[in-house]
Image (cartoon, rainbow, N blue to C red; front, side):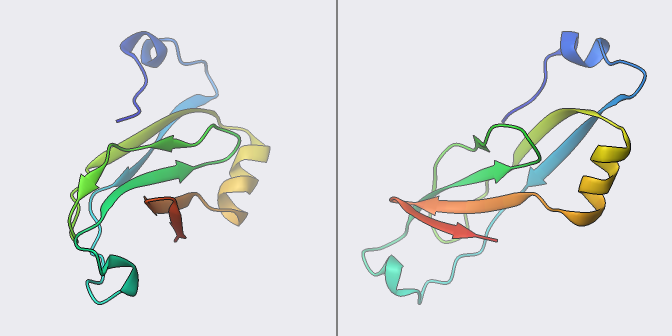
Length: 102
């Protein structure tokens, strides 16, 4: 889990806030040809705004329970608000070098 420390949370400026993105679970299609060798080992990667990509631990199976939260300390200004209105966060499920983007 990528979370900010208590010191970082206590030190928020007047135009700063915390944005949290949570991925709870996935339901992978067992009939997918990529899973012919058996249940996959996957992780979730999250790309948001200008921050580095963060990722969960690996989980096995067709219904992985990621329960993963990424927290970001953000400057809430006009530029950021316009970004939220017009862009998105990218969540990828990664398996054995294969990337699925949703």
